[in-house]
Length: 120
Image (cartoon, rainbow, N blue to C red; front, side):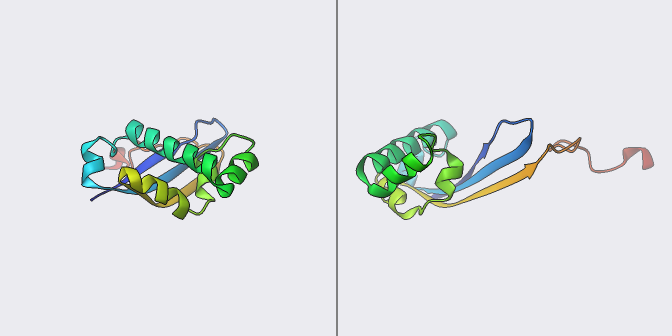
């Protein structure tokens, strides 16, 4: 079993938003590449499509999203019925955390040096 987290950013100049999608991936699924972003995304899309096609909850969620169901919408759903479908592919979402901040980081990025080198 592999535990991993996928970070899903929103591309915007007006806000900083990302989702951390925590997943457990069986060894067999990992061997098929599902611990990489694009294979996992393909599996997730297939599972969510099936969920929308076959369940009232999925159809309702699709309609409520104005047919624009994204990671923010998924984060507000019960993961249990979706995980039942994903389990067939050896994947389980354990949690989705969404973090958001209005505006931008205003000069503070991941690579900002956090020591005043001129004072050393």
